[in-house]
Amino acid sequence: MLDLQRQYQRIREDILSAVERVCSSQHFILGPEVEELEREVAAFTGAADAVGCASGTDALWLMLAACGVKPGDSVITTPFSFLASASAIVRAGATPIFADIDPATFNINPQQVSSRLKEAKARALLPVHLYGQCADIDRLQPMADEFNAVLVEDAAQAIGAAWGGRKAGTLGLAAAFSFYPTKNLSAYGEAGLVTTLDPARADHMRRLRSHGSSRRYVHEELGWNARMDAIQGAILRVKLAHIEEWNQQRRELAAGYDRLFGDAGLDGTALTIPFRDPKAHHVFHQYVIRARRRDELREFLTARKIGSEVYYPLPLHLQPCFGYLGYRKGDFPESEKAAAEVLALPMFPELGEDEQDWVVQSISDFYC
Ligand SMILES: *Cc1c(COP(=O)(O)O)cnc(C)c1O
Image 1 (cartoon, rainbow, N blue to C red):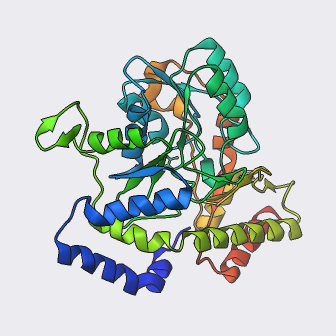
Image 2: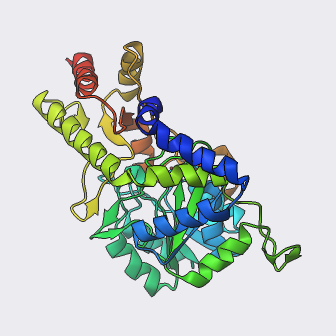
Image 3: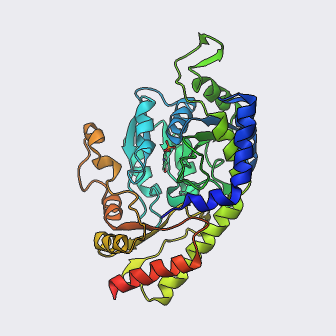
């Protein structure tokens, strides 16, 4: 599914010297490495500023808090995502309101957002760029404007992705990134970051990530310890220099899967290959098919030692922890259908062509 060893072997010298740099400085939390990373990610995305933090989950919370989400507010998001997209809303004191997905892209469906906005006043819209493809910002931004809500991005899976030529991280007021080890740009532990178009919000996030303090032991408001380790900052700087190349390799591998599934006569019959929105620059954090008899196929692949994964098997409105929100099975049929059909196949820049052939050959063996 993902072999991080191969990447490490290729950049080992640079990683070790970055770690050595931090150890020699004995400066372990924030500091110059994290500040440089913030500048470099802001420049890479085109955002005004960036704030490093301890995880993607913390990035979501910092972003929501700094964009004015307060206790008693509500925030519209997708039920077809990782838990943190919604739990961070609760952490900011607000209530998630779900809107179903577009079955083609798996991203939040603007039409559904529009009806939610008419029913309830929301402080923010939080689309998730799922699998590395941006949500339909052209339709979401005017809705946010009309209803006086802020648009913020869950870009955890989408570093380097773009919409209409603008990079994820600049498509709303702010965007949250995760550098969890499986992500396209990944740390050697936990790390996250928020980009924003508004320098004042960045200053606020810098306070919030250090217990709401800008002067030592004076706390203007309650924050949290959400700081990034210097070692993670230094490692991420090494890897950021490769991200365009790695994303391009992912895109080529995705095109390779498409071609092989087409040649095998599987696309449109046994399975459906990922749809690309013409406005989106997809960075294939995951290559996700819809598959008939998905669970049986997965067992078959596992028996051949081929990794695959279901992102995500239980939509957020049906999670036990969100029972208090009062949603029922059947409320978001497209998300529930996707949860039953999606399968992510091996995808990482170093995946070999022969390995990819074997994945497709095996899927073909299963169906034929
Ligand atoms: C990974 C991920 C997160 C959380 O990031 P962590 O770094 O694991 O806290 C949030 N949202 C989405 C969509 C993710 O994929």
